[in-house]
Each structure stands twice: as structure tokens, then as C-alpha cells.
Image (tube, rainbow, N blue to C red; front, side, top):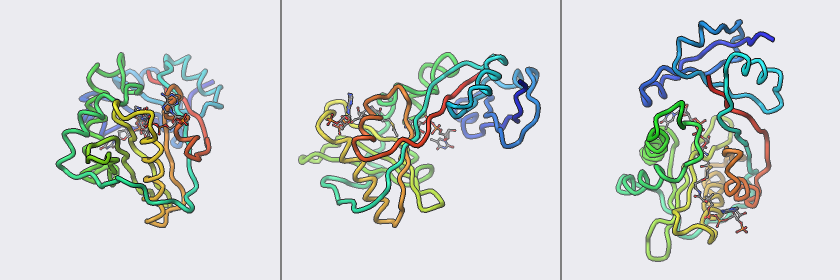
Length: 230
Ligand SMILES: CC(=O)SCCNC(=O)CCNC(=O)[C@H](O)C(C)(C)COP(=O)(O)OP(=O)(O)OC[C@H]1O[C@@H](n2cnc3c(N)ncnc32)[C@H](O)[C@@H]1OP(=O)(O)O
Ligand SMILES: Cc1cn([C@H]2C[C@H](O)[C@@H](COP(=O)(O)OP(=O)(O)O[C@H]3O[C@H](C)[C@H](N)[C@H](O)[C@H]3O)O2)c(=O)[nH]c1=O
């Protein structure tokens, strides 16, 4: 089966990771050749997990499985203000960068396609950009009673009355005591304050703690996908 897709250069990623990468765009269908693929260091493809024929065809072109992803969402209704939630400011960036660079170990920006330090550097930049409002729009912090940071969640308002969680993490020493749940509820409350009706979130299929957290917080599973790279 021929693969019908074009390759869209990933400009932000190429500048950040200093490589030539692209993403398969199935909305612009053209026969895909090995010659087109070899012009790139990495070509990424995201397919719904039920697209087995396309996955087989990409495997025949040398694509390999990188990770599975689950997309979930929560309907926003009747949220409650959570205690100890603050908006992150520039003075929090150094600590947030340090935590984010370690927290998201299960990442598709991993070796052998990316350099060993790339994934940590990527999530550190992501959370800094969220505080500055230049990618995600805001970062909320969960603080303990003494004012120490226990966790964070970044949020992006989408165009259609929805929002998306970018990154969410509890600091290692604060895990297992409800901070993650408090952050999800704070994110939902952030949506309600903006009259948004749906909160979306994606995580790796291998991240059972995150999947259980979102399901226990009232999210439904919308779809599953695979990332393949060549
Ligand atoms: C959008 C994204 O960023 S997805 C990536 C999510 N973030 C990460 O993976 C970063 C590293 N991990 C973490 O920061 C944390 O482990 C989190 C955020 C996943 C969970 O945070 P915590 O504050 O420990 O969660 P919290 O105490 O609120 O637990 C709520 C529920 O999550 C689930 N859960 C939390 N930790 C675990 C775990 N280690 N194993 C299985 N389930 C877990 C459980 O269902 C738990 O409910 P329960 O205690 O009634 O069983
Ligand atoms: C910081 C930043 C990033 N981008 C670009 C770079 C990428 O093309 C996308 C982000 O892609 P995404 O598929 O969301 O990346 P991940 O697979 O790492 O993310 C998933 O796992 C995370 C741990 C987290 N749960 C996340 O919500 C998931 O989607 O954005 C950009 O253009 N500008 C930037 O500043």
C-alpha cells in the first residue's frame, strides 16, 4: 500500500533541537518516496491506533514505533476554587525548569532520534514559555501551607471554547497526597472562569500514573494514537 502524505517541516523543533525534522501531513496526500524521507534527519508520523494498514505501510518504509499516546478530556461543570493555587511568575522559572527537566522522562523526544539531554531541555523550555505566556498561556502552581512549591500545571486556551493542559507534574517529594488531583481541579476551575466547556489533555500510554490521575479526576478517554519515526 503506498503512503499518501506530504512532509511538513517542523520549524520550531528544528530550531530548538538543531536538526532537520518533519511531520507527515496526511491532509496533503502525495505518494511518499524513500528519497523524500532521506532528505530529513527525522520524519515523525502520528496515527490513530486503529489505522493499522497505514502503520504497516509506514513500517515497510522504515518507520519505527516511538510511543503510544492517549487523548482524554473533561467536561467543565461546577468546579471549585482550590486552596494554595497561584499563578507562576518569572521568579519561579528557575525552579520550574529544574523540575520539568527531570519530570517528563517518558518522552518521544528521546534517544536514538534525539540527543540524551534534549528531552529535559525541551520540557524546561516548555514550562518557561508557559510562565511567559508565549506557548501555553499560563502556568498555575500548587503551594503547600508554608508556601513551598508542590506542583504545576500549564494551560493553553484553544479557539473553540476548549483548553488543553500542556504539562502537569507534582514534585517528587509531594507525590501521592492529592496534589495532582488538586492541579487537575485547578485547571478545570481556570476553564470555568473563562467560560470554557472542555479541558483536553494528552499523555503517554506508558504513563499509568498520569492516566489513572486523569481518569480518577473525571476525564474520559477520547482516542489513542501511535507516534512512529523514521
Ligand atoms: C499533560 C502531562 O503533562 S501528562 C504527564 C503527567 N506528569 C508526569 O508524568 C510527571 C511525573 N509524575 C508526576 O508528577 C506525578 O506522578 C503525577 C502528576 C502523575 C501524579 O501526581 P500525584 O500528586 O502523585 O497524584 P495524586 O496524589 O493526586 O493521585 C491521584 C491519583 O493518581 C493516580 N496515581 C498517582 N500516582 C500514581 C502512581 N505512582 N501509580 C499509579 N497511579 C497513580 C491514582 O489514581 C491516584 O489516586 P489514588 O491515590 O486514589 O489511588
Ligand atoms: C515548548 C514549545 C513546543 N512547541 C512545539 C514542539 C512540538 O511540535 C509541539 C508539542 O508537541 P507534543 O506532541 O505536545 O509534545 P509531547 O509529545 O512532548 O507532549 C505530550 O507529552 C507531554 C509530557 C505532555 N503530557 C503533553 O501535554 C503531551 O502533548 O509543540 C512549540 O511550537 N513552541 C514551544 O514553545
